[in-house]
Length: 94
Image 1 (cartoon, rainbow, N blue to C red):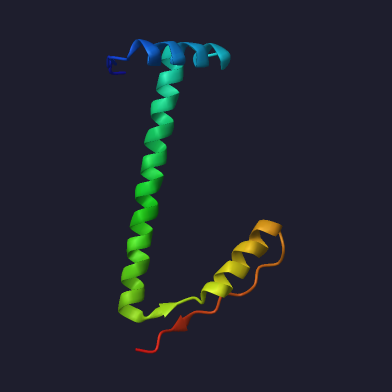
Image 2: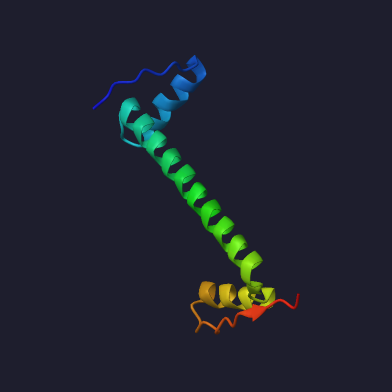
């Protein structure tokens, strides 16, 4: 395992110490977890953006999309645990 040093302001060092103690972790474990969590969040954001770009490219090439009201109905049903309505693709009239 590699070693890295961090320079923290006194204020941040105190905040980390208090939060680490409250969570039952060492300051080191708290910071490692925080860095891992942030790295995962950024990776997930990058993945989401890549899927969005691929979706936009597909739409631009095919003109196929879904009506917003159908997507909204699908999301609301999913959140409520109801049966999911079918999403029917539509092609834009170009």
